[in-house]
Length: 218
Image 1 (spheres, one colour):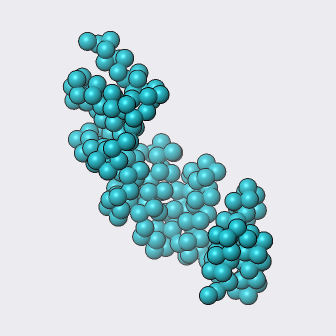
Image 2 (tube, helix red, strand yellow; image 1 turned 60 degrees about the vertical axis):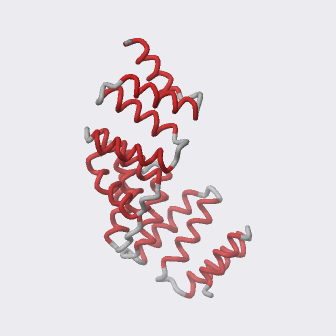
């Protein structure tokens, strides 16, 4: 077992200082290996030392620009700190460097959504769903992006899949209500979806507002 793996196990046991000692040794022994820099960055991030954590993530990318794990780690840090443009760049590089995992595509799509670039987000969210059909949140965000780009039938199909996978997904029921109220103009069906959202989450303000708007138009 290498020192990175030993360090990760120590972290899981809550032995942070011992873990950092091993990561430091790994960096000294293998300064071109990005893993120890990434792990050191993770620990510092957990300790809320964002400034130093960033330096270690950047160092990981510097020593191994083609490391998908290094690019992804830096992207995740940027995303957490609301630096969405840089996050998108890093996730994109992680994918180009060979990371073919649903989460990489999902995070790239989500970064574009936060940048209000829905059209850019769509293919990455679609790919995330293709790679992991059980990821409810990825499918939900994909459905929202479809609705924003006026692909209503596809949006409904995916929202229906979301509530099938997670019957307590209040936001999915709310958005189904919006679709049926606006696009399909089926007020009765829309009200059922708003009611279901409120049944799951009684303080769902948007669903409550949607229901009141329907009642006003009756």
